Image (tube, rainbow, N blue to C red):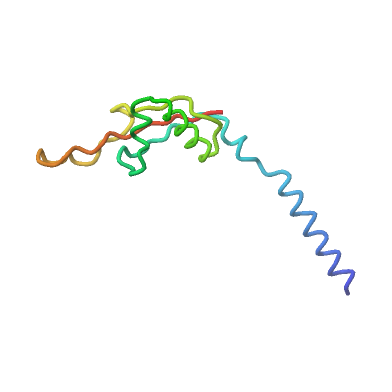
Length: 108
């Protein structure tokens, strides 16, 4: 009886190893480019670096891409008006307009 249980357990371990070996990695799934839109008022100061294209913008954009499973940032900056829907109603004139979203394009 012990041999049968040990054999079934061994088969389970081998099957798990084979399935893990054949799973695609995150790097192969991220071989294309992807563009992310980030709110301009995220509260972390990301907009200051990315919108001005300062040296810190490169560091922040690369860190964002690495956190998403990509190699590095291909481009970054303030998002073009046609990149987002703008489906939210415009605020009244007395209130401050929301910050325009930021765009980071990541690739290998």
